[in-house]
Length: 92
Image (cartoon, rainbow, N blue to C red):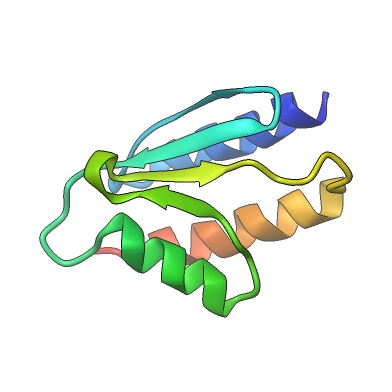
């Protein structure tokens, strides 16, 4: 249930032009970004890290990876999605 809600939240981020696809199963999820001349997946990773969120990233595939602890709460996921939306909204 929590994984489905997390994936649905990531899929809502597909409204931003920089987002190519949200995918995954359970709590092993990923957000693939479109190639962009001034914004990379590493930039998104560092922006989230500065806000207190540790996620994985795969630069060659332009993918952010999410594999949280199984004890993660719904509030934590909501905060992460809100911060990620703020980061993606700033990409022109």
